[in-house]
Image (cartoon, rainbow, N blue to C red; front, side, top):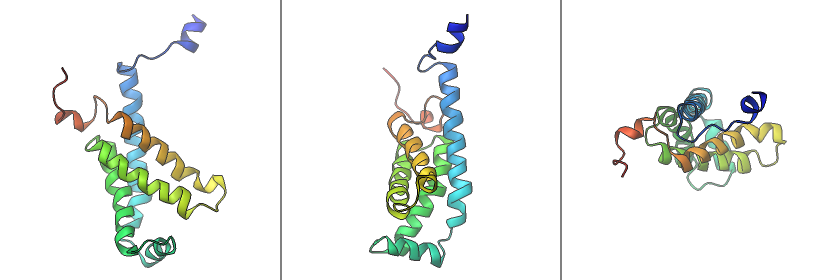
Length: 142
């Protein structure tokens, strides 16, 4: 009994698997959108300056791209709508945040960007799952 509780594997595609991945997708998406992206819209001078310091050629454009990736991408991720494209934009933004903006910072500072990066990579590879809005538009499984 103890062994079963401690070591039983959750089958891929099961109710428990879908529930866990949906919980992760919704929470991470909303956290990214509301706690990080919303505050960057519209991009302020300080944010645009920070993007410029990273060497981007059109800092205002890339500041908007980053803010929309975090806010819009986070909302899309939470909904499970256009999950893979949203996750790709989040991955690009978090790579820049983690290894560009926070490159010289201690791990505790860059950890948040890296955590969102890894979560977005999971959904870039996996997709939204059965409980995402993408399923409404997916071709039938053969």
